[in-house]
Length: 482
Image (tube, rainbow, N blue to C red; front, side, top):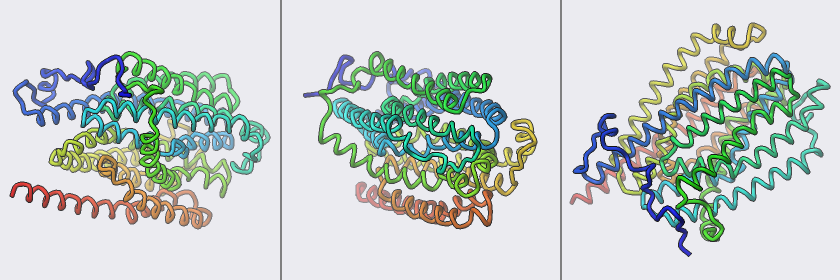
């Protein structure tokens, strides 16, 4: 059965038809006499600008939430309980692979389906992915309710204080239940990104950040126990995600709304197969980048996570700002590559890489030079954050930002297997070195280990891969001309 719904079989709804005057005002030209490929390129530019602009609002709200919540929670929780809180917060990043990579696989599939204007297939992908994510989410939530009470969380977090020991188990239960429920609720964001409507998702995320900020402030004001703080941090984004799904699929784009009759075993298999590669990639990246808090907690105690977390969250501003322009490139590149618009894709890759490097370098230098003043007025004088740790994070954020555009290009190209091999080698090297060196060198060594592992096992191979890909495409273009 064809998966069409009320709203027609075209993706060009009121959200996609772009005003010619607005494009001309932004410098992208306009007019009805332009060539179709030129109009598509201008439309991609418009969507990137719209997504980046609204992303700025969403990131500003997210950054404000971090800036306000860190000193509030730090002072009322204390060192050990805050270390537990910071570690649980990092779990939301570490467990991003819990969707088996289906979210990222769906984004790529939707972007390429958009390039082919195949609404039926897009809806089939969305319906199949929604079915799988709902099943995974229910399993995680049930595990949090039924199995979590039998796990020794105090040993995992290495906590000794009586209050921390009492609160860590229910806090993890709240986290697992909320996280499981959020998996199907976040699917709409991937769909919106794949259809190059990230600006819609960003506006909803803005609302979620402000709601989260308010709930965390209230929790800190009443000195809420740790489980209630976790709920205050996770429930607002979950509620906003569900509301976004209802509005988008019911009113804005019902033609791609998930439906039971559109669930397909072949599409589930394809989604799982593509997602499986992203799943392995996410596990490797999570092990390399987001396991530091847990390693520190196990090796040096939960209280030692605090200083590391302060530096990490300070320089996370770099990633949050650079991602404004980088993330919208993924669906735009996917749609361009589906139409064989290689010149636009390659030009966008080069400009995005150079721009991300320059911007991240400037922001990291400003944060590094101003870090004593920022930390003093942010969290106070009771914390000794090593300069080597701050410098390591500054360098890492520049490397991470520079790699953003190439990663989006590889995702759009569906070169996931190559990324998986690089990520496994990088994660293995990083984890071994961190486990061996964390005690003798301390927490300052961790970001430097991440930098070296990434450059050697991922950065350099990616550079070689893209150069060979470009040469191969150039030869194909020459043969086509002949």
